[in-house]
Image 1: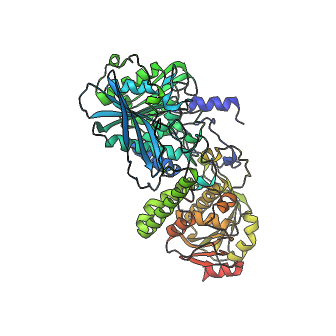
Image 2: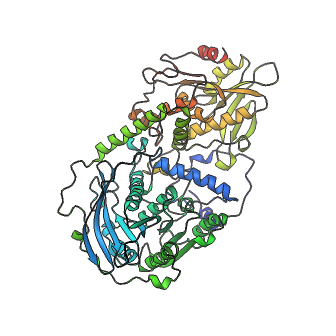
Image 3: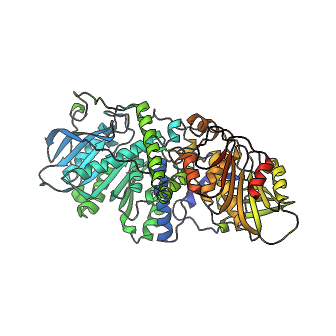
Length: 639
């Protein structure tokens, strides 16, 4: 557990104006990747020196969020089949009921607030995702009123839309926080509450842009708490959001406590402040409160976000305000948001024009979509949606494979890389430490890894030679007999100990914040290959995975295209079984990213031998069902 001093140091240096430190040249004395993080672990923002440096990171971040959502490759969009009905006209605005399909049989329900007495538009539009109020979008309390906020926007000249989180009010498909469970088989396919709500938000933009009275170039988004998370996320991944105001959620000390905020792999390498900064240079207002986890916004999170805006010469487009209040989206916060959106979407800089007038919220029967109406016959439930999602994923994979290598790589290389949470380091980023007697340790000092290894030199000869990385699930010592046999043929052999900390993973959001053992092992293999190939005495590099490590090597190989020959033991793994992945090789989103089918396709035509497959691997690469002996593997590598 971190000391209080270390936590204070993180908070004091993080998130904006941390002193720059040079990349350490020495490895840590122990691999620190076994330390478990959770949603309350303090984070710090890296310093970005140039706009190009940030843009590269922002592009990576967008890919990562979309893969975490299960939305990469992007699913095909079904017709919305929107229904707008039950119009009620009030003082300066109207309110209507709305329902549309974001997926076939998967319904988004909400209310559309429009201005009255301002002509036909087109008007700017505001998305209003809600937080975890007991009654969701119907909440009308001192600390927050969703209908009140939408009424305020409509009276000021916007089309405002609020809709249900999954499981709230009219959203009947399954209870909120209930499905799909974190770490379940659905997460293998990228199906999560977080991803589904993000997809709903994307389709809400589609819906608003389809309305004749909406200006499609002037769309904003604001929400509180869980709705603040959704505001950040949708703004980061969809450029159609031009102005945003996430409320009480941009924090370096708490990242969100619900399934709808914690997607698979999501925050293993990022946190909310970076997601918020991905809006740059689009105008953004951070709304904070002294009584929750955004209490440090003005001195920590906001300076970090604004430092990114400065790279664009757009510091004036980032603002923040903190009110002395509990977790909220109260009248003070709403008026601050009204003035900010008015400045950027209405062109009115006078905040006095955006004071909130008294409002009366409609009784719930005037707002609920299914009040007095039968629910659709084609409505999906959890089981049917999971089947549809899986079938869609399989079709997208098949279509991409049929489209040819270039198109397949464009879609599935990022998908697999982000599913594995993999970084492909440059050779200069990998440091090796000589431990004597052929033993060494290597790693990336700024990532905290330290990977033990043994280098076996062949006898005699000089100059460049073929080198082979050998990976055994029990480490370099178990691989030593094979390494010795291979070195006798004149090859240089590196055997490594992949990550194996035996961590406890009871936290239901463990894989939102922590990489799985398999992900870290694949990283170790790629890092080792980069280091090995960069040696001056190496002409070419091979890769061998023994026993269960063969599967790790197959996942790593697409990201080391310089590898000459690859041998992998499939160890009878059933690549078509979700149970097999959950029990033996758990990597969230791996099946959505194409699993071993994508990996072997990305390897392409390079020599690849997969053995001990049983019935698991389909033809398309050289496979052998039987277990091969060491001599047979050596013969294949050296022929």
